[in-house]
Image 1: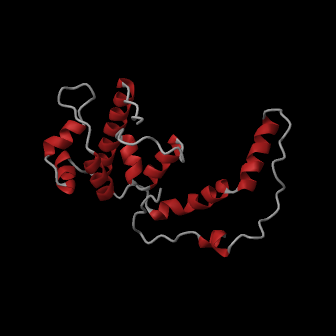
Image 2: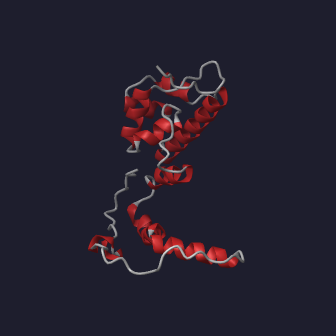
Image 3: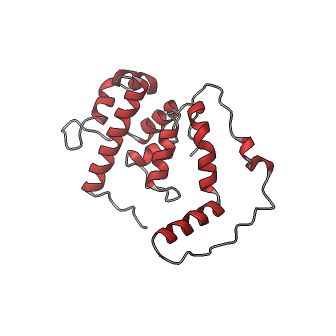
Length: 178
């Protein structure tokens, strides 16, 4: 039977610090107190206070899996991302650190502010655009540009992939679908 490797002291300290910073920022953005969080997920206020203590403080405690899942659910944030922040789940590897961070941040941006950047993000996700950017970078660096693929339009592009299918703002906040 293989056992899961123990977390190092450094990993524990880093995840505790990341989770603490993240939760404090979530509280600030929502104008919530420790008590508000405790009430929302049905725990004692002192429990939340212990999560926010610096790692190494005698009162510091890591939140449980169930508490983190409840917190993520109540905040409308992907549970796996919050579990990773709390050091309760190994990173999935499917997203980079910056991609996960952006996904968490997007949850705090109203739809009407996201629509202008939606088209830019859609464009950056296209393979042809990535190839063009790579070529331009190579030119600027003085290297020979790499010809990854021809820039032919995709004949299989569905109407849902067109810019006219961008989400419309309804004035409500968007949730991250990470």
